[in-house]
Amino acid sequence: MLYVFAAGLLFTGLDTSAKYLVLAGMSAPFVAWMRFAEHTVLALLLLRFWSNPAVFRFASLPLQVVRGLCLAGSTIFNFAALLTLQLAETSAIYFSAPMITIALAGPLLGEWAGWRRWLAVLAGFVGVLVITRPGYGAFGIGHVFALCSTLSYCFYVILTRRMSESETPASLIFYSALAPTVLMAPVVPFSASMPPSLWHGLILLLLGVFGGIGHWFLIKAYRLATTSALAPYPYLQMAWMVASGYLVFGQLPDRWTLAGTAIIVAGGLYIIHREHRLRLKNRAAPNEDSADLAEKL
Image 1 (cartoon, rainbow, N blue to C red):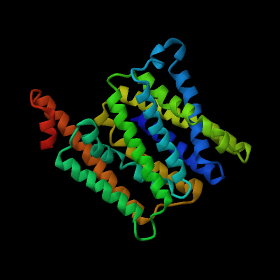
Image 2 (image 1 turned 45 degrees about the horizontal axis):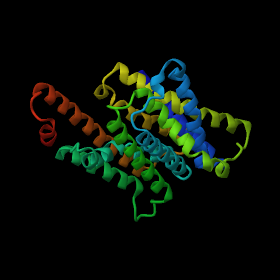
Image 3 (image 1 turned 90 degrees about the horizontal axis):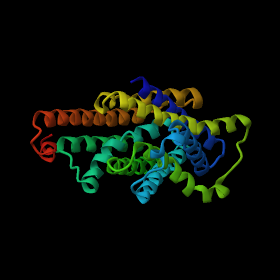
Image 4 (image 1 turned 90 degrees about the vertical axis):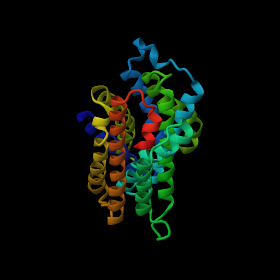
């Protein structure tokens, strides 16, 4: 749990730093590229590539590249959204990702959810509508970027599930950073900009540290505890985001953002509860088809 708490703080630092830099005039694509370039170096060092050949081993390079592009798209869109949205708004929309993933996992992976979990998906959609309020003047380009970021992340998660059986964990970590670093390199000369000050340069260098070590802490956490045991705790990142938004930018979420966040978190926690019930049913009835169980749950 402590690793998850620490990861949430680091990811908050990543988003806060990115928002600080794009508000200072730096382009979102360049800030995202720096984050991945630094992450690549950190991944090589943390995975001790000199004694761990699994870092470079892959079963499908095209899927590794597509997965890396999905993560890059999620990051670029998120950084662009932060130019106009509060940290709490982008985070709340991002937390609808588990529900969107469930909706996409059926047609893409054949993992169909039961009707109760579909209700949780619907609740997440309602939560996003409460936050964005289309038709009432609140919906803007920042919300479009935040939704694109969330959708890109959902495809990243689905590809991770599909590739987890054939790819090593080390390669999944390494190529998710290397692929966007290489593929985004051609746009760097057109989007690169010097940090306005030495302070901004230091923050730019910390992006990879926040992102790389944050992902490393999550890996450590899931090695020490089950997914179901840790699943509720990432939602605490909302608290860090609200606090950071207030302390750094003097922003507090409005009542609509808080209400939508509550709906999304409630839907996410319900999905966690149903997944836990499904695992218990599978253990109690190992011969019953898991797809039928999912239908019932």
